[in-house]
Length: 279
Image 1 (cartoon, rainbow, N blue to C red):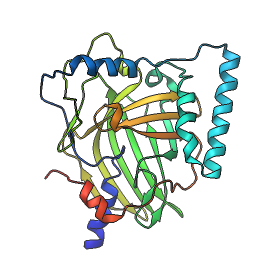
Image 2: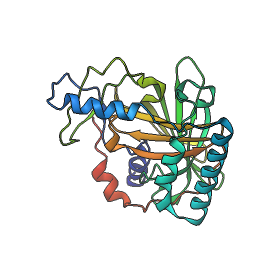
Image 3: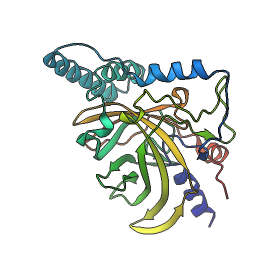
Image 4: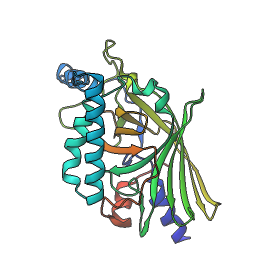
């Protein structure tokens, strides 16, 4: 029983991105930092793109993608933030969440998010990915599989919608100088590249047999930002609330990823401290 509870605890924090608390919609609150806050958001929402010919853009994209692949192969994470930013500056299309390329399977090749979102489950090393279904219900799945033959898997089922700019708030999570705001500017098309995800159910399977199936409390949500996407590659900045300062990065591809071990395993004690579910 203890082992099963420990496994459930580890896998439940699969609720990427780096989900260490439950999220609910914020109550209306005023703030003296309103003007400064929305200035920050306008700068984030309006992505600066590099002006160049289509041929030059293709060449740049191919070069940055090669550089990222080479850095991952040699294990040099120090250059990745800069390479991601250079690729994001070529942000095409400008409305990635409304592109047909948005849907389908995406495998995580790199993330600076700690376990288990990087594919590491305690002593087990696996791979993580995401499937976005092209359906009216706007459903998706976060997947984690442990080889060989995916003998241990965790599947998080959820739904998504275009984000309207309203920040989420997390219990016991404070950001200096900021407050939750429920009246976002109407002149920003947040949904073009921001999406609010809501977790529905987590299923853990061992050798294909369902061990645990857990429903999430209502409004267990996150805000994700698609900062670059083409037919084969996608970069997502995923956060707890919609604020830039709590985001982590996910570099994903259509092709299957190798085993990820980019973050050291903090152990069950760390996970226990971070994970505080509501009854």
